[in-house]
Length: 347
Image 1 (tube, helix red, strand yellow):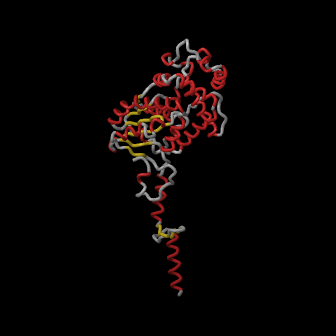
Image 2 (cartoon, one colour):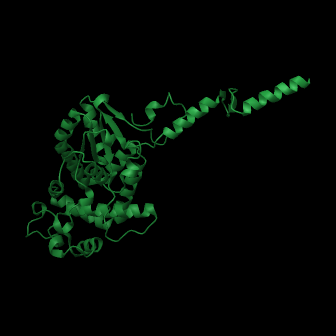
Image 3 (spheres, one colour):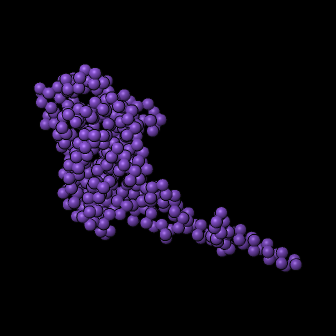
C-alpha cells in the first residue's frame, strides 16, 4: 500500500514539472487532451498574428506586387500598415502613388489653370448668407480677392479635410483647431519612407491635375455641393466619421459602403462618382505597367481601391491574381499554426 502511494506521488510530480503527461482542457461542449507542446505552438501563433490591414498581394508570387488602400488623410502608416505588413515596402521595386496630401496647395495658391475667370465671382454666386458662412468656416487666412475665384468643388474638398480634422480630434479626445485641415496621411508617410530609403517613386498625378479635375465638375452641381457642405456641417462630419471608422476596421465591404455614402446625394454624388471614375481611368495605364514589371507597391486613396468599380476590381477583371493579406476583420488570434497560415502575416 505504501509503495502504491509513493508511485502515485511521483507520477503527479512528473506531470506538474512539465512532463509528457497531457492536461485536460474542457469547455461546455468540448473535452480533449492538450499537451504542453500544443500550448506552446498556439502561443507562438498568437504572437505572430497581426491585425487586419487593407493590403492585397497582386500577380505572381515570385514577383508579387502589393496594392494598399490608403486613407488620403485622417490616419497614419503606423496604424494603417503596421508590422509586419510594412515589410511589403521593403520587398518592392518602386512606390506607385499620388501626390502627398500634406503638401497640398494652399487655397490662395490654387493653380491659375484651375481658377475661375476674373469676371466670375464666388461671392455673387453663393449669395451673402452662404458667403458669410464660407468666410466663417475658412477663417481669415485667405483674402477675398483670392477666394472669389476658387472653383466651388475645390472648396468642398477643402472643407472635407476640415471635417476630417474635427473627427480626428474627437477620436483623440482633444479640441479641434479652428479652420485647420487634417495633415495625417498614409500616402504622405509612404512617400516620406520612399524618400528616406531612396526608393523610386512613380507619380500618378500632381496637385495641379487634381485641382483641374475638380474645377471641371459642372458649376451648378459644385455650387449645390458647397451650399450643402456649409449648411449641413454635422451630416458631413458624420459621413467622414463613418468612413474613418470603416477604414480603421479594415473591413473593405464596410469601407466601400462608407465611401459611397461620403459622395453625398443626387447630382453632387453623380458628379463626384464620375470624377472618381475618371481618376481611376487616368491612372490605369501607369498602374498596369508597374504591376506588369512586378514588385510594385501601389498606394491609392482607399475609396479608389474598394468596391465593384474600384481599382482592385479592375485589376482582378484582367485575370490577374489578387489575394487579400492579413487576418479577416474582427477575427481573434488563431490557435492552430497549420490551419491558419493564410490568415497570418506577410509571406
